[in-house]
Image (cartoon, rainbow, N blue to C red; front, side, top):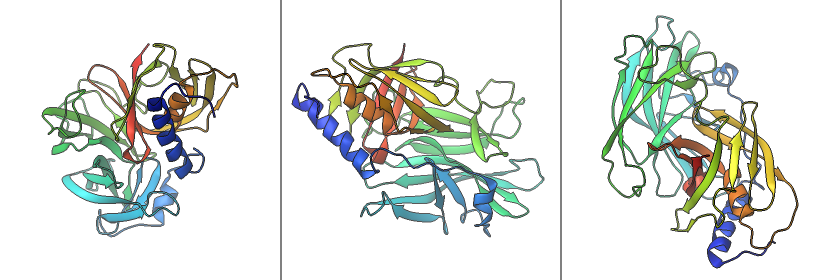
Amino acid sequence: MQFMKNSKHKRLLVTLFGLAAVVGGAVLYSYTYSEKDVVMSESRDHKNVVFLIDGKPVQLVNGFAETEAAPGSASKVTTQYFGNELWTDLDGDGREDVAYIITQESGGSGVFYYAVAARNTENGWVGSDGYLLGDRIAPQSTILSPNERHVRVVVFNYVDRAPGEPATNSPSVGKSAYLKLDTANNMWGIVEPDFEGESARTPAPLVNDTWVWKETALNDGTTTKPDNQGVFTVTFKPDGNLHGTTDCNSFFGSYTLSSNTLSVGPLGSTKMYCEGSQENEFRTAIELSTSFHFTEDGNLVLSLQYDSGSVILTKQ
């Protein structure tokens, strides 16, 4: 194992590699979502639906689901109905569908809120993917967009914390997510509040830009920043491949996006040895990322598996 400069780096690396071991050597779970998958669970009401949350199918039964956090793990992931329903025709078929919020907890301190939709089809209720609104937010109203140019755009209003505020602070900043359901694949697309056209399938700010590592903050209080500023980067390409640089080796691999969920890897890299390098901390954190969002000042935040922490990057 490569020599680490100090105990802080070693503690971060052990934590990240521990997470990688839990999920089976950092080979992440992948799942292709389609109408076929949900037809098997056609349900009688909108609280008995399969949703796709962070790339994994979750079957709600009476608004509740409990699954293993990892194969063989004693930890459980709990997903449940929260509410804030909006009944409206989301797909233009004349039937009334519903958009609402669910929560997911995995044993840590986080409570993650997702926007979901259940379509009332002739074959039964069909669930969407989940759009992550945030961790420990305060949901408010769910409404149709007041923009007269928007067609079937749902607005999820909520209160969050200001950029840089700890998650233990009470939410105090009002925010809104403008979303439109792509009924061809049951996925949410992001719509700008004043945008006149259709929704974007993938948030444009993530792809094609090069992102520079600012810091990694774990939930045990460990914070690590790069010793060499500006050399740790990752670029997400439109073809589903990514490329990164470090203070020693470069790395490469693939990724997939669904709304604001992210699946990375496995990653490969060049094999040069560099004493004291921080490349393993950075590359492993990228590989264990499961979702992303942007701060108000434009920073990219990658959330790590099991509510273990986050990686903050700035645009180059």
